Amino acid sequence: MKNILIPLLVSSIAGFSTMVGSLVIFFKIKESKYNKFITLAISFSLAIMIGISIFDLIPESFFNCIYTYGFIKSLVILVIAFIVSYIVITFISGLMEKEGIKEDLYKLGLLNMLVLILHNLPEGIATFLSSYQDITLGLKLGFAITLHNIPEGIAIAVPIYFSTKSKFKALKATFISSIAEPLGALLAFIFLKNYVTDLMISIILIIVAGLMITLSIQEMLPKALKYKEKKYMYFGLILGVIVVLLNVLLGA
Image (cartoon, rainbow, N blue to C red; front, side, top):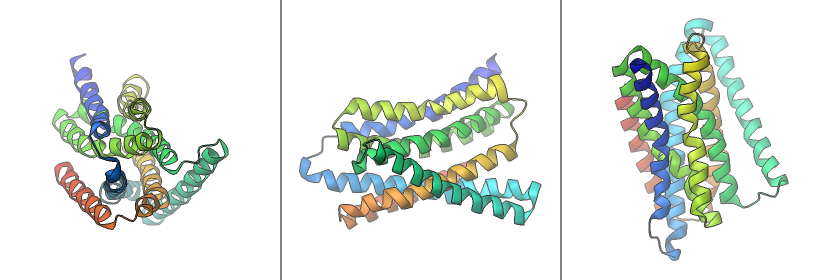
């Protein structure tokens, strides 16, 4: 039981670190500074999501696929993943508008929540299995995930809070996303421990990377540009790149 509790704890800490990012909604910000803060938060978050996808999720997953399928088939999987990602994000965005969710920031927060749930589930599985097999490797992976989960919490909470002025809605959406990671760990423990392969997780993470990059470019970047606060946008992007580099170094 001890060997199971530690991996579950590592996955849970990594997942609930997303809630730390949501705490920025408690900062006292003057109304005149709202646009600057929103621009900074969105730019920071999109840099994290694109950076983690390009420098972490895709390379490792792609090489795992190459080992099994070869380069050409793996490249086809990558291309299909991005096509599917574009279709999914466009479909969900259109569906939300049909359901009356037309406010840009609120829709963005909900889209971030959905995509990051899909991101956190396989991460929870990977963290649990890594910790179960080698606790040192699991702790290292868990810490790297914790580092990039914090800004992902910002990506959910800030748009929802500033569009609804409801801290409860922002915290609830962030919590739903964060619980996906320990849920993934529980799934791995109860059902998938003997069936999940590195290849299966790799393919899922390639799809998730496609979703994150598509969401960042298609939905988040236009929102960051909308407020015309270029200085804060550049500052957010630079901060995001720094965090991504730290994440890559710690996960190496």
